[in-house]
Image (cartoon, rainbow, N blue to C red; front, side, top):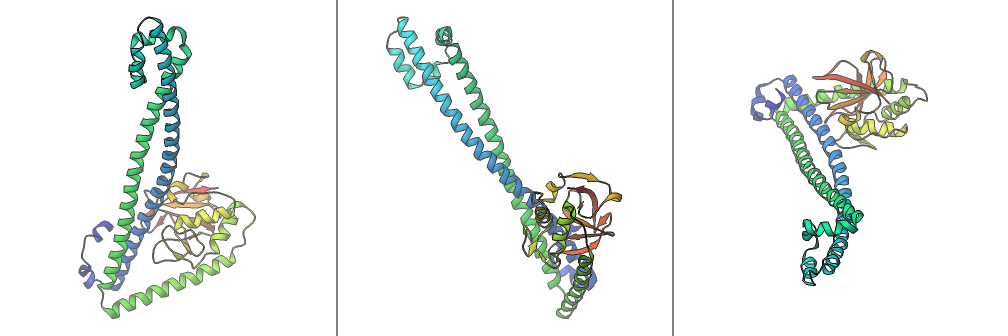
Length: 324
């Protein structure tokens, strides 16, 4: 349903009520947040693959140098062996043109093997390592290209959703649009006021989760910005990442990867500081603060806030809770 919004012209919404337009705008902004979280995951994978590719390239170069050195050593042995067997100096010229080519010749290997078993075995092992490293490097390169393409797609989809939300708003009459924005601001100010009261009322303890939670609550009112991780702008996983960093825990900047950390906690057993994950696939993370509430940086157009914790966050089902 949400995807269909992106295909419809802004004029479609002109006849809608301001409440309906507000709902559609919120859904489009939520789509953008989901795509941005997918982009966060792709960004981390790209960084990892680039590190792996760099390491593999360096390793491949070293193995290639070993292979060349071993090949030249065996070639010299082969030349001397054949010269001693009466084949003459012409073989040395052939081998010098492409030493490794002649190492596959059975007669040459037989001569070499008699006296240089270890050198031959080392050469073959190095050759296999080089071939294997080439295959792995090709695989990582292909994965890197795929992840970069995914990042471009997800960011583009998020930007299109936000652009469509703007078109939907602009389709309203000026007075209706201004009224909608005033109403939205009023709701957000109420949420902000309540959130600050909840934050001030939290005492906590010296546990890891409590330390992280106190940091997150201190950011109430900061705006949502994709890929931001402070000090005054946040996306959902950027906020949880930085909050737990203050408690001495290192997390990646991705809700889809953060869910792999810590231990699983049942919905009925959550405690302050537990991470809460929503969406299939996961596209949102927040932090439980107790008394049925959670703190989060939800989506574009919103600020860090405290809201009720339920099994459904909008249309996103609760998927998992993790304790770090």
